[in-house]
Length: 184
Image (cartoon, rainbow, N blue to C red):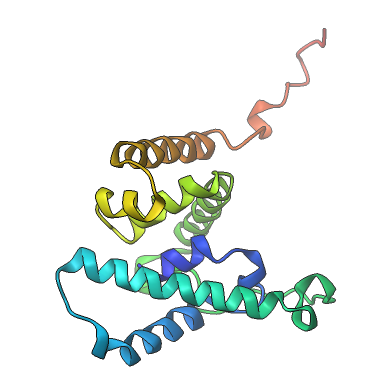
């Protein structure tokens, strides 16, 4: 859950400097250190507590990388690939994936992330809290300052938009006119 949350929430500025695995590990360490102040009252409450820690970690890291002396806009970047373990596919048993299945999986994941990034911030947040953190709609509504019905609409409409975007990502080879068609 934390991996998916960070992949979809962190943004390119943070992910250019830090791996998803490092962020997850850091939050787990923070949670273990803060365990004495936690009282378990159910899975939903625990997930909310975990997401709050993850959100605070992202805000700390964003502030850290935004400071002028570390501002990414001033850097001369050397292109780097993602760290091993940053893709959900890296955690699957290698015997389950053929090279073609892995390629298709990575392509679909990239398509999903691109479609998800096009959504408005409040819609992305509602989807993350519901589908990734699995918080109840009532708690999400409280966190976002909206009604439960509004949150349900954000999630369902947002997922529908992602689905449509993934089905129709833009013009492809099949959308180009054939050579035997005459132009108008």
